Image (cartoon, rainbow, N blue to C red):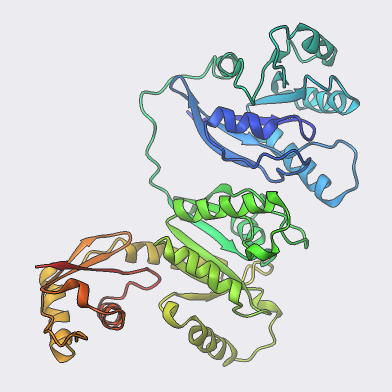
Length: 435
């Protein structure tokens, strides 16, 4: 049976994201007292008493507004309502009923969805006065709760999962997880939308539209892949709002939990310092990386342009020149699925294991041709090599003086490993151990 989908909706600043975090048991959605912080649909798989369901956090619903962002939020919330099997309609118990609540209640009635009315911010022991005001919405008995304090959340989840079948164990997710990362306004959401062939994420020409990382499923030749569209990373000096800071934290977490990071560049801007920092962040976290140069349709070019552009790009990348580069256009859908193919090949590379005998037969002559040198003049002897781990691949070099091997020789060995065995797009780790 498919998982039940539960959407949290309500006007701005009633505590939807706080409730989302309380239910899933972690600070996953951005929580801030500024209205409009949550913009896209935010998904999370969770469970209650062994009963599993998918929870969707939505942005603050403003029924009548011409503002670009508020209009986009409203459209996304409406899609979430359409997708949901059950809607948690959150209202503010402290503020009481306002006209926007009645408007949203009318929309929910027309949607003909099962609705649970949650009166949030009921922190006292006598909730009746705060709850009675909401009976007139005509959505059944209101449930008093406090997402901040966790009060009556268990009772609420009993209602949500009342007719959901329990499962014995949590499923293991074998799907390849691909995070789309990059600076603001390079086309991350446009790429995800183009891959999915639908407007799943908010896309505007305003930088920083996406703030929370959003997980979406891509079915590719019968295989399910998980795409993560993330908030744009900026230098710390440009972070002027606390909510953007939290977005960066979410993006870093997305890198840590993904298998492959696709770093999106703007073809018209080239490789800038901030792009290098983003690439460095992904490599430092030992993730496979694919570089996708977006907006390639906007570049005036001939047959040599791509080769010259890639050569200049690799010269700038220097120590990250082992990363694959794909030229795409999310707008025209040019080569967008090649990004997926390359990401899958990089994942295969990071899961590759080289036999110990092959490693020693192939790398042995390279070590003999150029043995390591120490500053003290003491001879360093590498006895043998073994791959001890995959994803990321880790190679152990057993020698008599492991602490005396300098960085330059480490890079020499890494380059030899790559020239013989590939590992394109994959960080390779070298460990020197006492024999």
